[in-house]
Structure formats: structure tokens, C-alpha cells
Length: 76
Image (cartoon, rainbow, N blue to C red; front, top):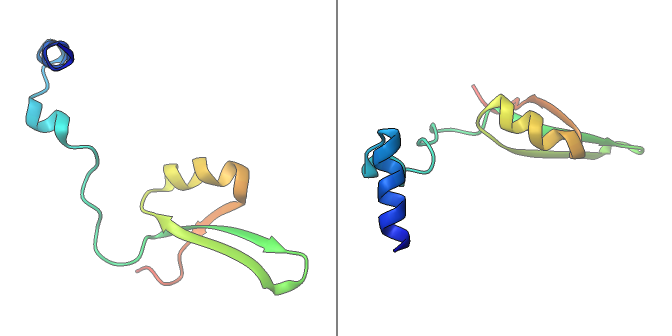
């Protein structure tokens, strides 16, 4: 029943089932270009970086609670 409802919804909005099954675009090769950086109170040893963001918007959304979105210096 659930599959039928999903198929009707997909048909109604004009998206093929093959496109609907695709959840995310393929990631580019190389390191992610964006990181979340949060500095500590004890200088460079307290800096935390989380470099796993391939687009700026997702980095900004994640950085709201954790720090600042910055460019990954290891990415080209």
C-alpha cells in the first residue's frame, strides 16, 4: 500500500522513480572544501575543525551551533 501511494505521489509531481531513488548528488573527489572551525581558549591547541562539508549551505547550517564555516585549506 505504501509503495502504491509513493508511486502515485511521484507520478503526480512528474519525477521518475529512478530520480526519486537518488538521495544525494555524487560527491566530488578530493577533500571537502568547507570546515567548521571552533577555537579554544588555549591557543592553537584548542582549535577544533570538522571538515566534511561539500557545500557552503550545509556547512553554514551545521555551524550555527558549533562554530564558524571556513574554507578547508587542504582543498583545492
